[in-house]
Length: 116
Image (cartoon, rainbow, N blue to C red):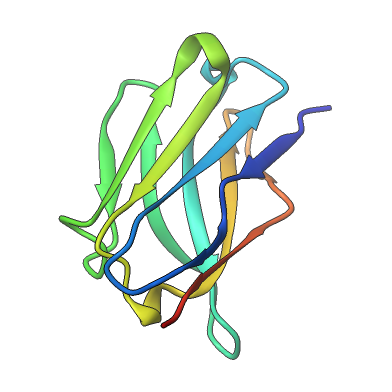
């Protein structure tokens, strides 16, 4: 059974940066795609950034130019570099892996708080 373990969250001031990491217990090539979602209190979970096995990326309009998704295949890890953070980026961030045969794996979620 695959596990996704997130790290790197915390508290940061507006304009600051954080890097989230998601390490899979399985090779990331066993998935169609991996990505990051987030959910703020009282709001629906939304896709922030995704990356396919082939390396194609996509981003939510609200984070384009500020966030970058990348991967280290040897470490079975996907990263989310978050720069120029805003208070509206505050949320629980979830790592996601899409299965080839349908369905998804999810990480436990990690808190990101942007506040002065």
